[in-house]
Image 1 (cartoon, rainbow, N blue to C red):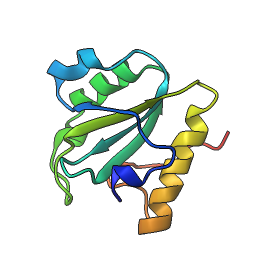
Image 2: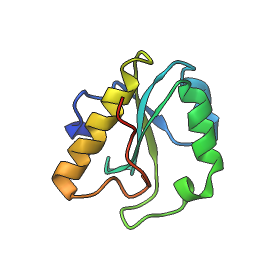
Image 3: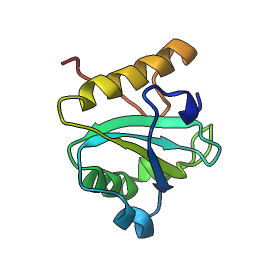
Image 4: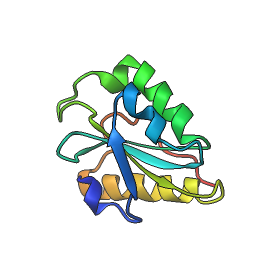
Length: 113
């Protein structure tokens, strides 16, 4: 699945490198890790996008190659803490609907709230 297919659309993207973490806000939101070509590898939510970005960069699993390629972009959509659970679940459901599984780097479903 390509990031452009997600609804609601992501609004920002930065290169998934530590030197670009300064471009990521500290607000709540949902985010997607994608390959250079925009293939969705991971869908997540957080109360602090900058902290979560850093946590993923520090995790070897998110930086190693997958069968689809490396995580190259960090796309995000700032949102209220009340909405992040709905948005993440919607994106995960869109991926499952198209591919029958969660994105390759997601291990568990989002909690239903």
